[in-house]
Amino acid sequence: MPRSLLIFLMLLLASINFAPLLAQNQPKPGSPSPQSAPTQQHDAKPSDVASPDAILAAAYDVISGPAAQEREWDRMRSLFYPGAQLIRTAVNNEGRLSANFLTPQEYIDRAGSYF
Image 1 (spheres, helix red, strand yellow):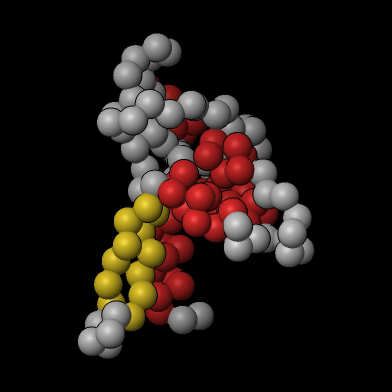
Image 2: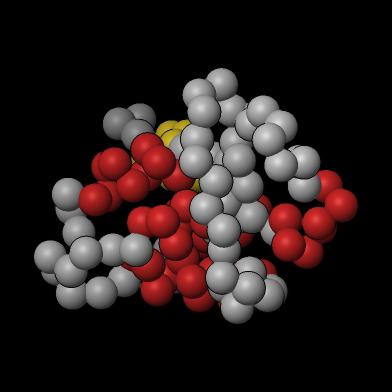
């Protein structure tokens, strides 16, 4: 597995919504989101967030599939805690790794037309 993909997967897993496992740390309903812009909270399927492996499998299930197949973006959004960021690593022009930070919505906006 390429190193940049492994790093991406580790960072993806680190930013995924573990709230069902840590329910006491959930914000109370109606409390403001830590993000500056308001976002709609999506309830995750219990089976999608039953374990770290289940969360990763759900993320892969959303982004995988035939070209032109509509993705379940609400399901993707449900896997992340409010304020989460994805970190994409790539080799820059100088040959060094660089990081690009994306919210789950920014990832969806960029990837949606690609899929």
